[in-house]
Length: 140
Image (cartoon, rainbow, N blue to C red; front, top):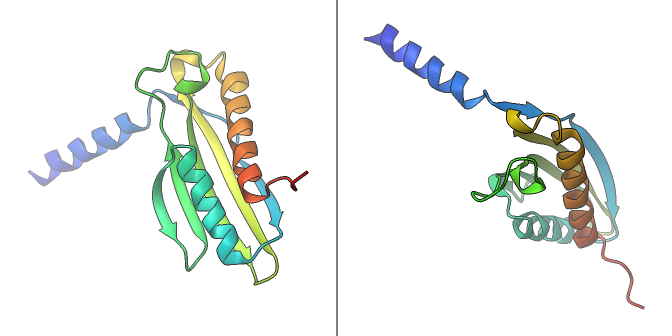
């Protein structure tokens, strides 16, 4: 019984990880001219607005870790078919914060030829929108 359960668990874990191609992991640091608490609030707002499912929400430690899953109606080869993982670490003090972001895209194997361009562009666009929420442009 234990052996059968072990094989079943191994099979389920293996099948959960197949069928995807992964892009390179990318890391950035963004200085934010507000307190650490305000930067965390902005980061949380930005990630939620981008429809990420959050696995870790740690305001004390300044961590947000989540995944943006593809749309259920996404067509293969489009940006909506790309999955994105994101980890944010907010540090700093009462005058200045810094937000570190580590991200990676994942795409179905069926779009492995288009994924490096399509998903990387989508990852960059998402990170740019998050950065704009963290450090909005000055009023004109």
